[in-house]
Length: 165
Image (cartoon, rainbow, N blue to C red):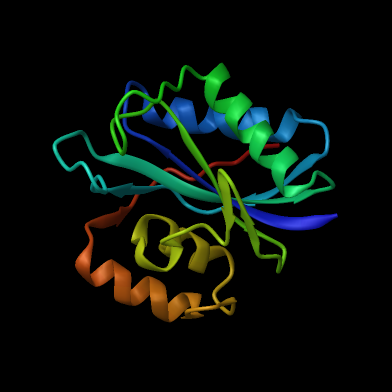
């Protein structure tokens, strides 16, 4: 089994329910074991800023799926939860990103791992650092990257914590 990290975000409708739904789908997908989930964070939108704020978290999974199979599973979950891809960086019911897949680097059409711009985005770095404070990314220690990114981006830890059983 390979340990992978999935970024989750939502800024439409009942955001927390979409995140919980995505986590339930992940946990129920053959070949994926949901290991743990970071706290929930409220974050300002990235790219297209004239939209509602996001709720974000990061999930750690163990999987025997290949990176492309895991990506397809994530895309299927998004589709099942009503995700449409009308506007780049636009509002979405759910967004699932394959951030890391073991220590592998993947560079295929439609899939790059580690996720591009991972080291710039507080909305994934902060929850990732919560799960793995000692992790080292190619750009440096995740904890330092998260602290640096969080100083320039609006991010607030929420009181709600996901407890899936």
